Image 1 (spheres, rainbow, N blue to C red):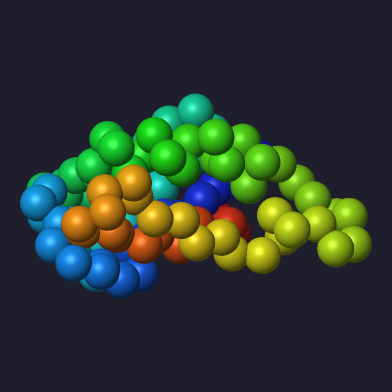
Image 2 (spheres, rainbow, N blue to C red; image 1 turned 180 degrees about the vertical axis):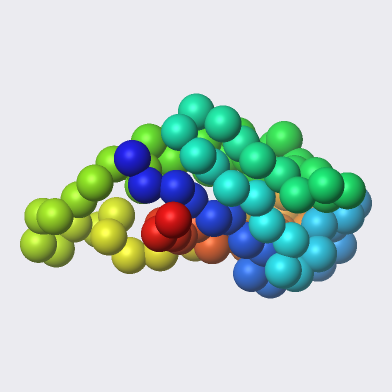
Length: 90
């Protein structure tokens, strides 16, 4: 399984959490690792969780859409936070 890095790419509007551009966390197997002193919005997290297993699997299939970084946004229409999910190599 691949390790994932999820980073705040941009914020449209106001985030009341407050997430900041550059904030990030890691998905490693079934664990979420958040840097000390940081957090993740549970509403944004729930919108991305279904994609984590797909992004973690090894994919050598030509044209597999999960081979590219994915961009998701939180469901808050007033403070949409955009996240990039990317596979990282250890």
